[in-house]
Amino acid sequence: MDILGAAFFALLTIGTIGAGVGVVLANRITTSALLMAFTFLNVAGMFVLLGAETVAMFQVLIYVGAITVLILYGVMFTPQSPRPYGLFFQTQKYWAALFVVPIAIFVALVAFEFRDSGAASGSGGDLVPLATSIFGDFAFPFEVASVLLLAAMVGAIVLVKRDEE
Amino acid sequence: MAVPLGAFIAVSAVLFFIGTAGVLVRRNAVVILMSVELMLNATNLALVAFSRRFASIDERGSVFVVFIFVVAAAEVAVGLAIILSAYRNRPTVDVDEIRQMKG
Image 1 (cartoon, one colour):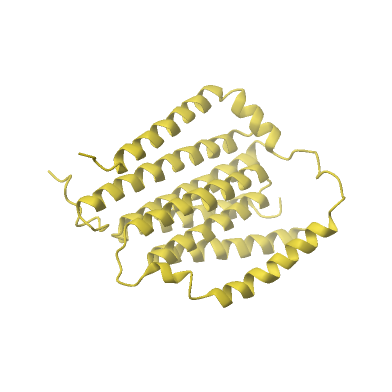
Image 2: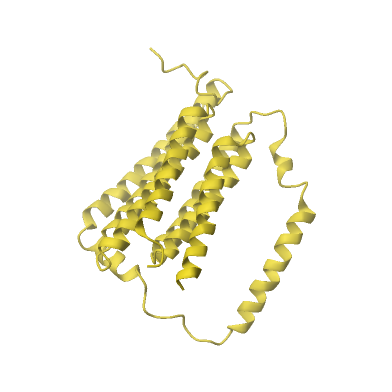
């Protein structure tokens, strides 16, 4: 277990720092954005290694999902290079199939294997103490955070809205 | 815990340094935003590591990480909106060429 944890930590460290350097050094901004998503995934792995599974799940949902997509939209709306960024995803469909098809088969096999294994472990991990803290001691900051999100949403809409004369 | 706390803090420090270097070196506004995200992630890693090491029952560090998630989401949304509206005035994302707010 010690060896396994250390090996995972080494892999995640290499991924985090390598992809982080890549974000700063990459010439193409799309590469930067995808490497940033990879950095976030590695940090989520570190959260799992630390035993904070709930935070890792939030990390994947918010950073790898939402923020990366948001930044890719920002890249799309501010075209800079003469090279068409849209082709980045469309010229490599055979390579993409090479990676996606084995993963899809693997996921299908796992899902089939565990089709009637009942509920996952009910211990809850770090979710229960996290929820107890947020809705107990930190209930007021939690509400303030929701107001902040609302203000940011309205502000973003106002900033990018086109003036209609 | 197999991996010592110092190792996580070291990774966090290196990641924060990379983000700082990105903010200082790159001139593309979107890449600067990404580098800020890297710095926030480094902070999250340090917070979770300390939280797991020193307070295994209470989850204060993880609560702060959740609030950092909220602030990061708001920051990216508003930051990209500012970049987009500046881009609409002058089609560039180079922060050296965006001078409308200079006195």
